[in-house]
Length: 227
Image (cartoon, rainbow, N blue to C red; front, top):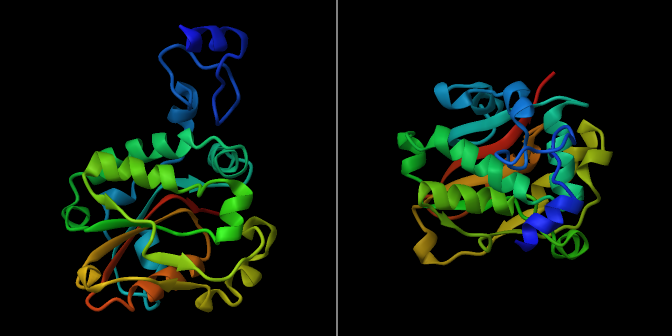
């Protein structure tokens, strides 16, 4: 009842195009869902996300749900997720991608989902990690553990979106570390993030996780930058 009253005065709008949502729509309107650029990476193991990490890190699997284009629907979604506190976007994208991933034998071998972490200072500033709800949604839908305490970010840095591609990679290899016990040995970790751009952040996170004896790494992201 209370929610209905709130919606009457403040009707929910689409996180992609800001049009009013119909009663049967949730977070993203039907038109945006129809027009949103899907990668279909899950249909091909050796997709472009997987190839992004050739010769850099030994990944078991890599994929993204959406293509990220400047000034496109996906950029709007990610912006609202990161800077407008619309964490429900991560939940919806996680539920969406879980349906594509649930039949993957590689994903079925995952032991824990690991989000790319924020530095403690950045977490206090933003109030949340933008990939947490995405990971929790995948965790629930795929029946996988979610662990945000193994991988840590040691270095505080300014917003990546304000940096050029070269500066995004600078010093990133020393940014992350791991905190683990023997029970994490020989585990398959699914590393998650919002957008794959250069891949340097995910590469650095993977190198940190590979300090764990016997660790295997797979990567799943909400989106991948696409020209």
